[in-house]
Amino acid sequence: MLARLCSASIRGLDAEAVDVEVDLSRGLPCWSLVGLPEGAVREARDRVRAAVTNSGFEFPLRRITVNLAPADKRKDGSHFDLAIAIGLLMASAQIIRSATSLAKDDVFLIGELALDGRLNSVRGVLPLVLFARDQGFTKVIVPIGNVVEAAAVQDMEIYPAEHLLAVAQHLGGSKMLRVADHVAELNDQPVCSEDMADIRGQMQARRVLEIAAAGSHHLLMVYSPRLD
Image 1 (cartoon, rainbow, N blue to C red):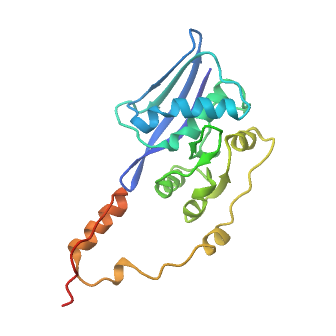
Image 2 (cartoon, rainbow, N blue to C red):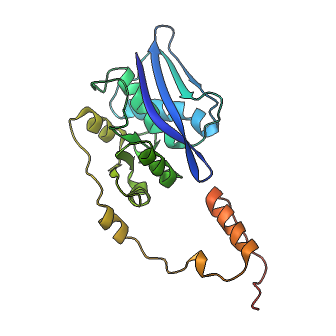
Image 3 (tube, rainbow, N blue to C red):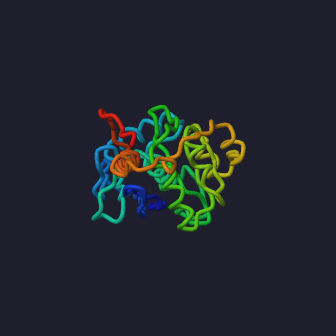
């Protein structure tokens, strides 16, 4: 049986569409993950297997093929974990839905899985949620630790989840997740008074800071700024 979900891969400050396809077929039990996955994505096999079994689901003893399309572009990031796990549960009929795919009028999934099924925070949630909105999605499920970042995007229903089981119950309709309150989530955060726009001159230093922030790079400043 085949299940298909929509996800995305981060490229700098943007996101590119990725289809997560999960197929179960006859044959010796094995798991193939294809579509040019990088290290963090390849390791999803072990995380998903442990999270599925430790959440009370049955891990299918079938030939499992997970394809991240398009196959000619590299995929990186642990945020694919949740989509792969839900696709596996849908393909094995442990989540019963009217269709074998999550359509754009449904929900976009973001999250890294711990071995016990908990959802860990991931990087790049803001561009992923913006991508989901641009693609026509109106609902997004994210780890609780990413709810504030996701809530910064308007016109989206953000569902913070703590565990894979909670996501499965929500998609199956047995127990719905609570929608995050955008205003309340954002008001709980401290307000930063500093702004890059307030800096006069220092164009090269500002560009270095922007590149480091965009790429999540480390930065060490070892010189004194000019005062003139």
